[in-house]
Length: 88
Length: 183
Image 1 (tube, rainbow over the protein chains, first blue to last red):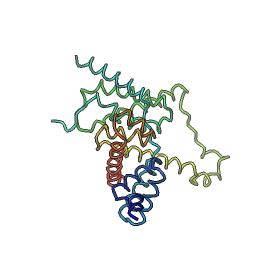
Image 2: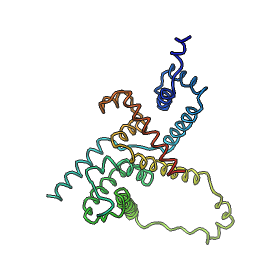
Image 3: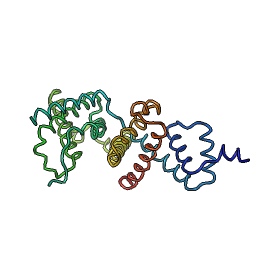
Image 4: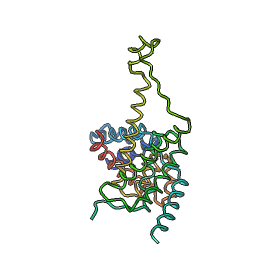
């Protein structure tokens, strides 16, 4: 019994961690199973999971993009060059 | 002492993603967006001495970018020749079509949604300002770029459990900030 408990029961801290991973599809099947088992008994974590999913949906909906790294590097060099020129 | 000051060395890290997402919905072309941002940075450096510190750095940069976007449209418009002006409704053959044309069409609604989604994106980026810069960068790599956990860990020299703690804190902060500023 205690072995099974140890294998499947997790605390809220661990559950939130699994939930975060699940948002990025990084949770292993066992972790997911533990999470759902925990959610069945814990109202606080159900709420957290709900909020977390909503945040993921919002981020997906916003279609955010980042600039390519090489562009950023280029801009940085440009700024440093101009900035130094102006201040010497 | 002014409430805000400029720190050009941090502009790219702090604002380039924001400026990019702001521009991309307005010009709809990556290359053009990148050029406009680069022009914005240069123009900002040139007029840095006129910055009075009344607005935040971001607001100030956006106001310059707005001018650049307007200039861009002026330029491509003059290239095409004069802007066309069409007046339909005084012409006879168009009579009777008036009411139908007033019905909102599906396309308009999606355009509005797109705008709102973009504003949401900008709000998210603004909220990320409140957390540690490095953590924000890690969060963006993971969430927006969708990079592998392992790749990010190598890039930033952290362990996976570090990463998840950072992601967790960022998500909590972001959720709280959006709740306050978006709804």
